[in-house]
Length: 117
Image (tube, rainbow, N blue to C red):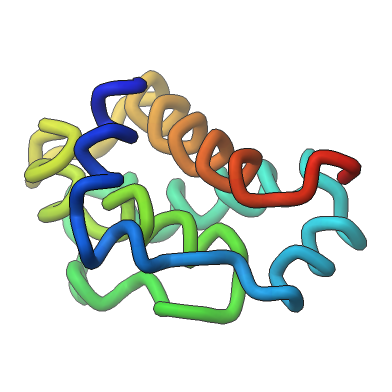
């Protein structure tokens, strides 16, 4: 996983994403376990199906820490998943693929929140 984070850090677009104060406060209020639940929910509903009608537009650019992380980690759509993570398109994601995606998202979030959270 370190390789993907290294490559993402070299992308001008991917590296510009940061958690706002509001995002950090939301994480603090909800707790990191709840944020992980949200990540699983978003991935299972928005990325895991074989067919996604609005692929490429299903992940908002703001509004939830998971959405920010998805754009920062290229886990926002099936095209990005393929380009950056080599997860094939046009198939339902496996449990292992969903777990990997959530792990990437959560690792990014944990790197960007204050240590005292």
